[in-house]
Amino acid sequence: MKTLTPAGAREKLRNGDVLIGIFCKTTAPEFVEIIGHAGFDFCILDMEHGPIQLETLQNLVRAAEVSGVLPIVRTRNMSPESVAQPLDLGAAGIQVPQVASKAEAESVVDAAKFAPLGHRGVCRFVRAAQFSAMDRASYFASANHALVILQLEGTHLGEYEKIADIPGVDILFIGPYDLSQALGIPGEIEHPRVLDEMQKIIAVAKRKNKTIGVFADSLTQAQRWIKAGVQYIAYSVDVGLFHTACRDTVYAIRKLTNAG
Image 1 (spheres, rainbow, N blue to C red):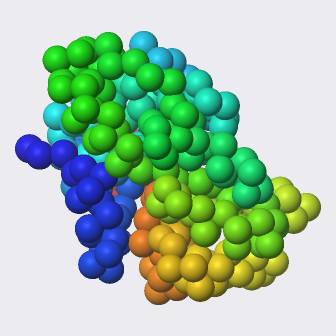
Image 2 (spheres, rainbow, N blue to C red):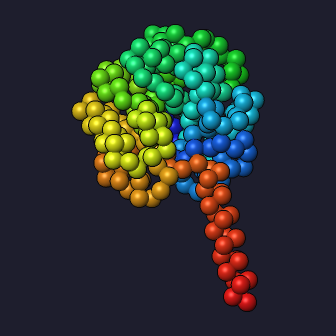
Image 3 (spheres, helix red, strand yellow):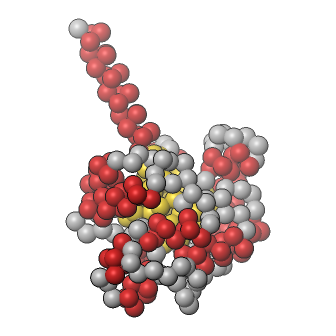
């Protein structure tokens, strides 16, 4: 099975397709393989809120490649090493949390790209370069095609306008939970103020012809944002979906037991 590449993802987005993915907090490669075999376009390997370490991450990236799902890594933060290390391990892209200014966005792009597009630390003895087996010129050129996704989790609309103009930024991603906290109503992602702010950010992306992404944890939310023009949908979390499936199964069997 052929893994979706960053170039393939960009082509799909240009064609108006919606990419569907899921956040991954487990450290089990089997889960990532299942996600690919289920047909998701991408998985977000979560180093911000999950227990994933670098040693584990490389195996999760391998599992994604095996099953054809695009491995995106949500970084711990926006430090240069947090941005570059997942890319060294072969991540197809990085998703950086809590980006609130043009300066921060520029620093992320600079850390994610080799010269002349940035100043990412240079090493070709890494998994992404087949541990030096890959032609060095080809590696440095191809590495600069990794996706850069920035999470916008506040109300800095003026800065978001500037961020959308930065070369090398592929997707602006709205984190509704952190946005709700920024608005003083943590967790209330269906609150009218949160929805209104999300629509404002989507409008910024549309004006700038920039792909927008959101997190959704219900089909109703996913439908709403797809209708609004969102093309990068991170649907729920692996452990959450597994819990729901287990809970519903137990409930169904208990009903059979009680009926008997």
